[in-house]
Image (tube, rainbow, N blue to C red; front, side, top):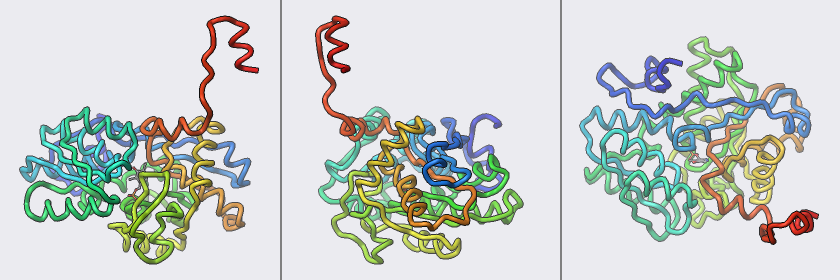
Length: 349
Ligand SMILES: *Cc1c(COP(=O)(O)O)cnc(C)c1O
């Protein structure tokens, strides 16, 4: 992997030229890990997890952000701007700091995991919280950007989607082909759009022989693509996908229909269970939203919808350490006792 730079590695597939700065924090080239416990449970011969939480700021957003910020620098921008449920803000703030740009983030008040907020603060972003869901924050930053106040780096910026499609290339390179099916969480729907574009291009350029069926999963309380209409008050503990009106709506529908896949909902209980299962049975600590892909795989396998499938990939979009509060809620209080062998034994009994 030359230099650990995603832009350098995939330059021929990206909208970059010699003039585009080779900005990098070592993004991409994330592990694809075999999931033995999920194979046993589902009966699918091969289940793989794409561990996107291993990106520099702990989520897949870095793939798109490195391209979006590099292009902003190339165009002479001084400020980048985004709305975010947390990970876009963390990524934008880090790459802006790296590139010497200012960064402004607008967050839905009270709905951002603690670790993500810490990242945006540490990287020096200017932060404003607005009352309302993510969709209201996105609407505000779109207006600010069209007033010429900064370069918008949400996934409505086409460079984001271009960068994010590289994850599909990596999967094809590692497996020697595309999987039969891909399971992915869906919030604003940029990532499912990007993966589908990546798989289509991989098949066209000989990187893969086939294209996967795309299975996108929304949280039941925030499932506009499943219900077919925007959700004004989206609700789920998986805050990264707490989105009621996805910007890449049509991209998600195209990915579903062109691939012969589906977009479905999983309940918060199913997401929470998959989140704990990944950590306890596969050793992979992802964030709640990421586990929607595993919850979706389990639901579809249970329903008998995957009998013809041999090899699947679940995308684990972000790192569990970003959201300590959700992890903490998986267990009761930690006993505090005297520092004696008897007291510790009693507490463990
Ligand atoms: C952004 C994000 C998603 C949703 O991706 P979209 O492109 O908005 O559909 C899922 N999981 C995590 C951890 C995210 O940060």
